[in-house]
Length: 441
Ligand code: CU
Image (cartoon, rainbow, N blue to C red):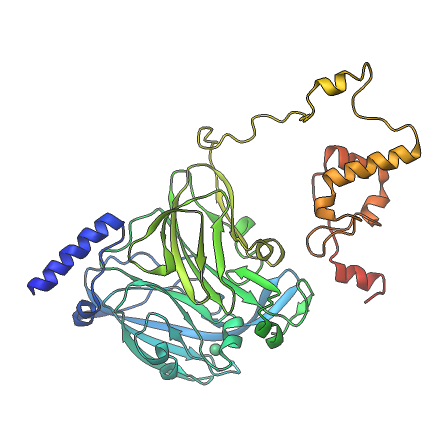
């Protein structure tokens, strides 16, 4: 008893130093008496259930219904998702260490496949997979004691496992430490996943799963919360200036590790890999393995729209791994000034052009050959890096300028665009649709 008390006091002291809530040992959690019973409060992303106020262990009854549903993966692209609760990611479960969790897995009778659940929060074979293998129209029950605190991934583990996971069968369970996590103003649930479709990225219509691409680990989509654009615009996360935001971040995979980053924010605290031991501080990017998690806290010191990405950046800008956090409010000039000046920069110094005499400014071309030469220089300095040397563009990233129907339709507009920029919406057809139009495909 004395030993236990000593260890508890030590853990509390460590918790005070590290900022983590007080967590007990496995043995203490196993011995915790179960008092009463309650139904779990579950939540769909990006929301999470409220923090647990209880100061004792209880039996938490969790019902999750597996549903195979057709849904939107990207604009014009639908996919048959296999889900824990109707959405990707699955329902967020929140319990307290020491709790007895009674899992009910209900496989909807309309489903075609058997499914199960492997919770990484379980100490037991398969994380509950064999005990929960359930045919359509059946319901399975098993229980486990939450011996370790942490943010844990759960997923389907029915063969072929990678296929069930690739179809969206993952979610998270938070086992709160007994002392709870530090209080914050907002908590959100963000989970990354990679999708493999028969057609290429952007190819329209219902897209079946591609096992070949999954085996090659070449996803067509990498997304947060189940679809491209799930968490942008009207559906962006939100917070107010001065608030502290907590993201419970998971990576369902099945394959990719996420380099999780919020552009324009520094994570004040990160519980890396979702464990409740010593957190780290002042982190820019945290790596989240497939089947792993992290908890990140940051205080909002300046307003704006903050872009949440996998910093393996083509996944963000070409495959969909991009979300938004919107913060309204007045500019905090000391924290971040915004642009304070935009002047002409002359590396050779202002004297170089003045010395050319009256009328000198931008170089002028007297012949067509000179015009072409100067135009090529403008292109090389301003356009080439993105649109490539011959203006052919990069598929799915930068549209072609050479032979562009948009530019050729209005040459005056095209020249004005180069000089003054262009604002507003421009629709660029993906290359495969251009191919279809021109009869190449
Ligand atoms: Cu499954």
